[in-house]
Amino acid sequence: MEAQDDARVRNEDVPPQNQDLSFLLPAVTAFLSEYGWYAAFACVGVYLLLQHLRKNRSTDSQSSPVSTSSQDPDSVVRRQAALEASRRRMQEEQDARAAELRERQQRLEEDKRRQKIEMWDSMKEGKSYKGKAQQSTEEATSSSSLRPKTDKKPLRNSGYSPLSGDGGGTCSWRPGRRGPSAGG
Image: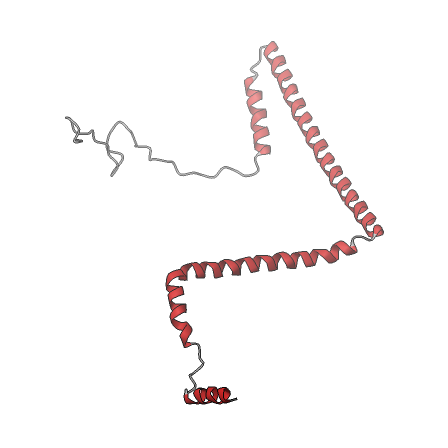
């Protein structure tokens, strides 16, 4: 018991010290001065990883109720039937467009064949066949072009001659110096 009294006296003689975290300040500053950039990059990496995991978890939680409701056999059959019907409809549209394109190409080929026959017949009779061919091609190009050509500005004026030497302005070529090169 006397030992306990001595311990109490010793504890009472020592004034209580402030129990704050100031003793950690030198250790923390030393750590940050040594490994500060690594710690900053690690914090940014952890933040980005958490954002990525949250995004994945939210998409998984959104898709899971859909998968549980899609397990109903009737809804699966209805969905597959609707998908098949839409595929069939799109295929029919594609087939119709392909048939129309084939028909148009056959008409064009028939027109070309007829024009060649007409040119051959007119050539046999001794008539000029180029005049009709040019007229028919002009008609074909005028009907196929949707808009008229715009008036374009010429690239250079009509008085330009590359051999005259005075057309360029600031851009003029001069031959290099004669003699050995200046390299060492």
